[in-house]
Length: 233
Image (tube, rainbow, N blue to C red; front, side):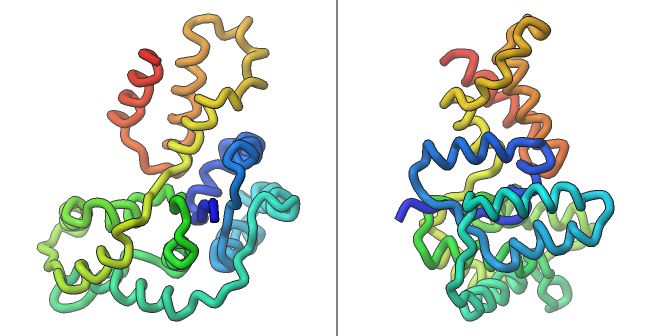
Protein backbone atom coordinates (compact mmCIF):
# COMPACT_ATOMS: atom_id res chain seq x y z
CA UNK A 1 0.00 0.00 0.00
CA UNK A 2 1.28 3.44 -0.95
CA UNK A 3 0.40 5.56 2.05
CA UNK A 4 1.45 8.66 3.96
CA UNK A 5 0.19 9.29 7.48
CA UNK A 6 -0.23 12.90 8.62
CA UNK A 7 0.06 14.27 12.12
CA UNK A 8 -1.99 17.36 12.95
CA UNK A 9 1.09 19.61 13.12
CA UNK A 10 1.93 19.17 9.44
CA UNK A 11 -1.68 19.58 8.30
CA UNK A 12 -2.04 22.79 10.28
CA UNK A 13 1.22 24.22 8.88
CA UNK A 14 0.03 23.52 5.34
CA UNK A 15 -3.48 24.88 5.94
CA UNK A 16 -2.36 28.11 7.60
CA UNK A 17 -0.04 28.79 4.66
CA UNK A 18 -2.91 28.30 2.17
CA UNK A 19 -1.18 25.28 0.62
CA UNK A 20 -4.01 22.74 0.75
CA UNK A 21 -4.53 23.05 -3.01
CA UNK A 22 -0.85 22.18 -3.54
CA UNK A 23 -1.21 19.18 -1.21
CA UNK A 24 -4.20 18.03 -3.25
CA UNK A 25 -2.16 18.15 -6.46
CA UNK A 26 0.73 16.38 -4.75
CA UNK A 27 -1.59 13.54 -3.75
CA UNK A 28 -2.52 13.06 -7.41
CA UNK A 29 1.16 12.79 -8.30
CA UNK A 30 1.79 10.38 -5.44
CA UNK A 31 -0.86 7.87 -6.59
CA UNK A 32 -1.40 6.69 -3.04
CA UNK A 33 -3.48 7.48 0.02
CA UNK A 34 -3.15 10.16 2.70
CA UNK A 35 -4.32 8.95 6.12
CA UNK A 36 -5.28 10.64 9.37
CA UNK A 37 -6.52 9.26 12.70
CA UNK A 38 -9.46 10.23 14.90
CA UNK A 39 -7.23 12.16 17.28
CA UNK A 40 -5.71 14.12 14.40
CA UNK A 41 -9.22 14.91 13.19
CA UNK A 42 -10.09 16.26 16.64
CA UNK A 43 -6.93 18.39 16.78
CA UNK A 44 -7.35 19.85 13.30
CA UNK A 45 -11.12 20.45 13.28
CA UNK A 46 -12.89 19.97 16.62
CA UNK A 47 -10.47 21.99 18.76
CA UNK A 48 -9.99 24.87 16.25
CA UNK A 49 -13.77 25.21 15.87
CA UNK A 50 -13.86 26.38 19.48
CA UNK A 51 -11.33 29.10 18.69
CA UNK A 52 -12.16 32.38 16.96
CA UNK A 53 -8.59 32.58 15.69
CA UNK A 54 -8.54 29.25 13.84
CA UNK A 55 -12.21 28.61 13.12
CA UNK A 56 -11.93 29.49 9.42
CA UNK A 57 -8.99 27.09 8.96
CA UNK A 58 -11.09 24.39 10.65
CA UNK A 59 -13.84 24.85 8.06
CA UNK A 60 -11.31 24.80 5.23
CA UNK A 61 -9.81 21.57 6.55
CA UNK A 62 -13.23 20.03 7.08
CA UNK A 63 -14.04 20.76 3.46
CA UNK A 64 -10.68 19.38 2.32
CA UNK A 65 -11.18 16.14 4.25
CA UNK A 66 -14.81 15.81 3.12
CA UNK A 67 -13.62 15.93 -0.49
CA UNK A 68 -11.72 12.70 0.16
CA UNK A 69 -8.20 14.09 0.24
CA UNK A 70 -7.56 12.33 3.57
CA UNK A 71 -8.80 8.92 4.57
CA UNK A 72 -9.92 8.60 8.17
CA UNK A 73 -8.66 5.29 9.51
CA UNK A 74 -11.25 3.05 11.15
CA UNK A 75 -8.77 0.61 12.67
CA UNK A 76 -8.51 0.25 16.46
CA UNK A 77 -5.11 1.65 17.40
CA UNK A 78 -5.53 1.91 21.17
CA UNK A 79 -3.18 -0.91 22.20
CA UNK A 80 -0.36 0.18 19.90
CA UNK A 81 -0.87 3.84 20.81
CA UNK A 82 -0.84 3.19 24.56
CA UNK A 83 2.27 1.02 24.32
CA UNK A 84 4.21 3.59 22.30
CA UNK A 85 3.05 6.44 24.52
CA UNK A 86 4.16 4.60 27.65
CA UNK A 87 7.58 4.00 26.12
CA UNK A 88 8.04 7.51 24.72
CA UNK A 89 7.02 9.28 27.90
CA UNK A 90 9.34 7.24 30.11
CA UNK A 91 12.55 7.55 28.06
CA UNK A 92 13.60 10.88 29.60
CA UNK A 93 13.38 11.13 33.37
CA UNK A 94 13.91 13.64 36.16
CA UNK A 95 14.05 12.36 39.74
CA UNK A 96 12.75 9.01 38.55
CA UNK A 97 9.68 10.47 36.88
CA UNK A 98 9.13 10.31 33.14
CA UNK A 99 8.86 13.54 31.15
CA UNK A 100 5.71 13.76 29.03
CA UNK A 101 7.02 14.59 25.56
CA UNK A 102 4.36 13.17 23.23
CA UNK A 103 0.57 13.54 23.25
CA UNK A 104 -2.04 11.08 22.07
CA UNK A 105 -2.58 12.62 18.62
CA UNK A 106 1.10 12.39 17.73
CA UNK A 107 1.44 8.84 19.02
CA UNK A 108 -1.76 7.63 17.36
CA UNK A 109 -0.46 8.88 14.00
CA UNK A 110 2.83 7.12 14.71
CA UNK A 111 1.00 3.91 15.62
CA UNK A 112 -0.98 4.05 12.37
CA UNK A 113 2.12 4.64 10.25
CA UNK A 114 3.79 1.60 11.81
CA UNK A 115 0.66 -0.57 11.58
CA UNK A 116 0.08 -0.01 7.85
CA UNK A 117 3.78 0.19 6.99
CA UNK A 118 3.36 3.69 5.56
CA UNK A 119 5.96 5.21 3.25
CA UNK A 120 6.40 8.01 5.79
CA UNK A 121 4.92 9.80 8.77
CA UNK A 122 4.44 13.50 8.04
CA UNK A 123 5.04 15.49 11.21
CA UNK A 124 6.25 19.05 11.77
CA UNK A 125 6.81 18.82 15.51
CA UNK A 126 10.51 18.62 16.33
CA UNK A 127 10.08 16.38 19.37
CA UNK A 128 8.54 13.41 17.55
CA UNK A 129 11.07 13.55 14.75
CA UNK A 130 14.08 13.83 17.05
CA UNK A 131 12.86 11.04 19.33
CA UNK A 132 12.88 8.74 16.30
CA UNK A 133 15.97 10.10 14.55
CA UNK A 134 18.26 11.52 17.26
CA UNK A 135 17.16 10.93 20.85
CA UNK A 136 20.45 12.15 22.31
CA UNK A 137 20.04 15.53 20.64
CA UNK A 138 16.51 15.69 22.01
CA UNK A 139 17.90 14.97 25.48
CA UNK A 140 20.30 17.92 25.14
CA UNK A 141 17.48 20.22 24.02
CA UNK A 142 15.29 19.16 26.94
CA UNK A 143 18.13 19.75 29.42
CA UNK A 144 18.67 23.21 27.98
CA UNK A 145 14.96 24.01 28.10
CA UNK A 146 14.30 22.61 31.58
CA UNK A 147 17.66 23.69 33.06
CA UNK A 148 18.18 20.34 34.75
CA UNK A 149 20.03 17.06 34.27
CA UNK A 150 17.93 14.43 32.54
CA UNK A 151 18.42 10.70 32.92
CA UNK A 152 17.98 8.42 29.94
CA UNK A 153 16.09 5.14 30.24
CA UNK A 154 18.11 3.26 27.64
CA UNK A 155 16.02 0.11 27.83
CA UNK A 156 12.83 1.94 26.88
CA UNK A 157 14.68 3.96 24.26
CA UNK A 158 15.91 0.74 22.68
CA UNK A 159 12.40 -0.70 22.68
CA UNK A 160 11.12 2.49 21.06
CA UNK A 161 13.89 2.49 18.46
CA UNK A 162 13.15 -1.14 17.63
CA UNK A 163 9.51 -0.25 16.98
CA UNK A 164 10.32 2.76 14.78
CA UNK A 165 13.60 1.77 13.09
CA UNK A 166 12.13 1.44 9.58
CA UNK A 167 9.89 4.49 9.73
CA UNK A 168 10.69 7.49 7.56
CA UNK A 169 9.84 10.96 8.85
CA UNK A 170 9.02 13.88 6.55
CA UNK A 171 7.91 17.43 7.30
CA UNK A 172 5.57 19.71 5.40
CA UNK A 173 8.71 21.49 4.15
CA UNK A 174 9.98 18.35 2.39
CA UNK A 175 6.56 17.75 0.86
CA UNK A 176 6.40 21.30 -0.49
CA UNK A 177 9.93 21.07 -1.91
CA UNK A 178 8.81 17.94 -3.77
CA UNK A 179 5.74 19.82 -5.00
CA UNK A 180 7.98 22.70 -6.08
CA UNK A 181 10.26 20.32 -8.01
CA UNK A 182 7.22 18.77 -9.71
CA UNK A 183 6.09 22.20 -10.91
CA UNK A 184 2.93 22.23 -8.81
CA UNK A 185 3.32 25.92 -7.93
CA UNK A 186 2.70 26.91 -11.56
CA UNK A 187 -0.27 29.10 -10.61
CA UNK A 188 2.17 31.42 -8.82
CA UNK A 189 3.99 32.15 -12.09
CA UNK A 190 1.47 34.84 -12.98
CA UNK A 191 3.30 37.03 -10.45
CA UNK A 192 6.58 36.84 -12.39
CA UNK A 193 6.03 40.24 -13.94
CA UNK A 194 5.90 41.78 -10.46
CA UNK A 195 8.64 39.67 -8.86
CA UNK A 196 11.37 39.59 -11.47
CA UNK A 197 14.52 38.98 -9.43
CA UNK A 198 15.24 35.25 -9.27
CA UNK A 199 11.56 34.39 -9.16
CA UNK A 200 11.91 30.64 -8.53
CA UNK A 201 14.33 31.00 -5.63
CA UNK A 202 12.29 33.76 -4.04
CA UNK A 203 9.19 31.57 -4.30
CA UNK A 204 10.88 28.58 -2.66
CA UNK A 205 12.34 30.81 0.04
CA UNK A 206 8.86 32.18 0.72
CA UNK A 207 7.35 28.68 0.91
CA UNK A 208 9.95 27.41 3.37
CA UNK A 209 9.94 30.49 5.60
CA UNK A 210 6.15 30.56 5.60
CA UNK A 211 6.09 26.99 6.87
CA UNK A 212 8.81 27.63 9.44
CA UNK A 213 7.13 30.71 10.87
CA UNK A 214 3.80 28.91 11.16
CA UNK A 215 4.75 25.64 12.77
CA UNK A 216 7.24 23.56 10.80
CA UNK A 217 10.43 22.76 12.73
CA UNK A 218 12.99 23.54 10.04
CA UNK A 219 16.16 25.49 10.78
CA UNK A 220 17.63 28.45 8.92
CA UNK A 221 20.60 26.28 7.93
CA UNK A 222 18.26 23.64 6.49
CA UNK A 223 16.41 26.27 4.48
CA UNK A 224 19.66 27.69 3.13
CA UNK A 225 20.87 24.21 2.20
CA UNK A 226 17.65 23.44 0.33
CA UNK A 227 17.93 26.71 -1.56
CA UNK A 228 21.56 25.94 -2.41
CA UNK A 229 20.61 22.51 -3.76
CA UNK A 230 17.82 23.93 -5.90
CA UNK A 231 20.11 26.61 -7.34
CA UNK A 232 22.46 24.01 -8.82
CA UNK A 233 19.74 21.75 -10.25
